[in-house]
Length: 275
Image (tube, rainbow, N blue to C red; front, side):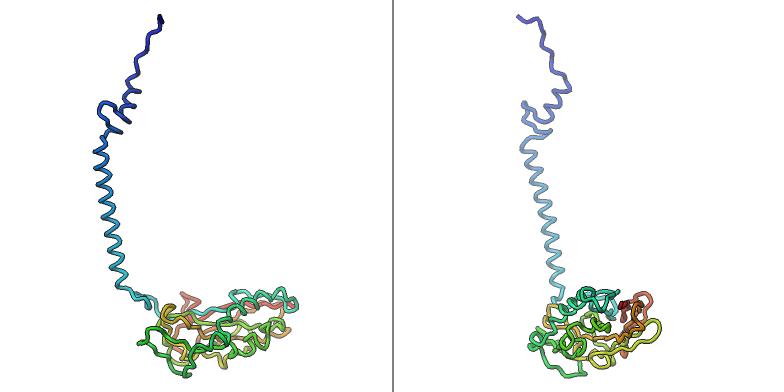
């Protein structure tokens, strides 16, 4: 017979056990199974109702949207300019192919959509006139073949002038749905300091009206932006010197002098050719 007396269970320990599960009442964390079931059912219905309201609201909103044109366009339709190769600092050694080859590859890749085989399916449009297609569900695109870029097409000169130290730069306007620029827009480039001879392709650096308006990616699937190639006729005196070139869109109502947005209707890049 043991002389040890069994110690009674401490009240705190007993109350904690009963809080998680009370065998007398069948409660779990203070509630019976039916009570927990009702709570679960309430929140299931509540959150299901919220999800349904959200889905209905989104569905109603989507019915008001146009698949082809954004409903709200608060920006003034003035496009920015971009260049290819996609670099604001074009630096290379004209005698070292490895230095200018990345630029050549970028131009080759970018101009693939302008190949004759790609453009044959597009329309021969009337020059100088907007290509209006508002009533057409799927819009056609005007041809823009890379051979109109002549010396900067990559056809007659596979290096785009980089091996000669007279590189070609492609300039394009950003796409804006419905844009119809007035006048005859063209690209004009000049160095920030000094003078420099520059060739433009197509002639006079024009963006023909027939490439406007643009109807959006979905409604205008075959569209390609018109390009202007700028060939910088650098000489030996220009080598080893960084030259800042500014290109602007002129001859139209499009803005190109907004100090708050230095890429609106213009672009500035730097070129440095080493011997």
